[in-house]
Image 1: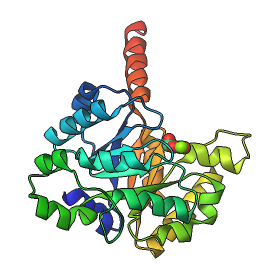
Image 2: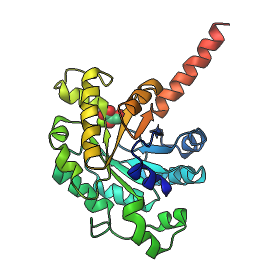
Image 3: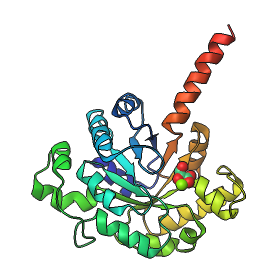
Image 4: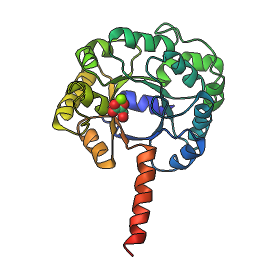
Length: 255
Ligand code: 3PY
Ligand code: MG
């Protein structure tokens, strides 16, 4: 997967990803036709199970798009299974300490970096690699991404980025805004969040790792790219579906 090399080596990769929580591979089939660079399957707040997610990976692969899965909080065993299913990367939410980051790497990388167990049958089929080739290249060609979305994660950012096998971070502006206001506000698109994002981007660059972030709409996603993120999400499937419906209805009613 050249995608992994691209995001790991290109300073300003400028990637835009889909984000899909509706647990239906056919939704992935359709959205993957658009000009996204990758597709995130959200298994934290989206409703995917392992079988539907692995079928969605097949839809991504047939559209030539890398699939990245966000696992539920602390469910690091799922990271191995999703990589086995042919995901190019995994995103773990709420990685708040070096210990969390090390636990993620244990499940997502083969030795010597981690202790991922062998069984990538679907990944081998998707990637057309021999078992030997996959074993040799998987640690390089897969992405292990830690979410930074709490005060604890901000405080531990250099430690988390220092864990070998953590390839990059993903900033969750919603949870970060709730954490920074001690529960008072959901305000993901503010100057305060931008300042934290700029700090996170700078720390990632210092560690030669990449930064991703969630944008609640296309314009916000563009701002996140301008702040130096390498990969951004330009809103979720449900938002896009409702916005498309609202726009069609408005078109009809303004006739
Ligand atoms: C957050 O913003 O907290 C996320 O997890 C991404 O939407
Ligand atoms: Mg979050």
